[in-house]
Length: 88
Image (tube, helix red, strand yellow):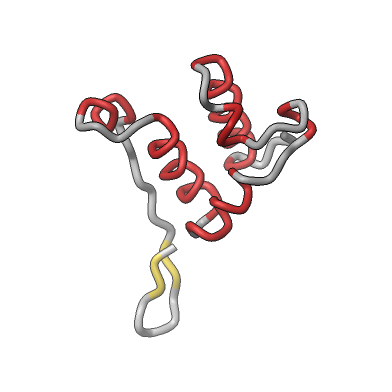
C-alpha cells in the first residue's frame, strides 16, 4: 500500500522477475526475502516468518527449506497461498 498525504491508501503491485535477480548475483534466499516482503508488507514481518520453524516444513524454517530447488518451490507456493488468502 502507498499512503498518500491526504490519508488515502492505494494498492501497489510489484512485479519481480526472479531470473533477472539471479543473473545479477542476488541468490535465491535474497529473492525469497524480497518475495516474502511483498507478501507480508514489511521486512520485519518477512524476516520473522522466514526464520520461524514451521510444521509445514518439517520443523525447519522457510529460509532453510528454500536451500534446495524443491524446497524453494514449496516455500514460494506457501507465499502464493498466503498472498491469495488460501490456507497454507
